[in-house]
Structure formats: C-alpha cells, structure tokens
Length: 80
Image (cartoon, rainbow, N blue to C red):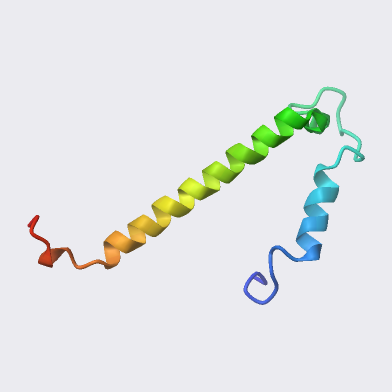
C-alpha cells in the first residue's frame, strides 16, 4: 500500500472523499438507504463526526492498552 510513502491525509484522498460524499453528486436511486443530503443538517453532521471521533479514539485506546499489556512483564508484579 502507498500509505507509508504518501500520507493518507494528503490532498488526493481527502478530495476524493469530500467529492464522493458531497451533495453535488446525484443519488443513484430515487429511494437510497441513506440519503447523503441529510448531512446538510448541522446537528446531524456534527453528531456523526463526533461519534466517529469517539469510535476511533476508543479503538486507539484499547489497541494501545493491549499492546502495553502484552509488552509489560507481568511476572514481576505482586499480583502473581
């Protein structure tokens, strides 16, 4: 993957994502499962961004915590 050489936060991926999720693209069907135009509502858009940030934050916390616990030598603790 090119993520290690080029940043995933560079202009190309961000422009692609913003273009794809914009409301300028017409819906492919008349009755989509989730109409992207609902994200024009500021409260819904901010809530979705907040929930996504919390999800990734908790994932990072659990991931780093698991790595820390795997790397720590638990044989020297008084809990054995």
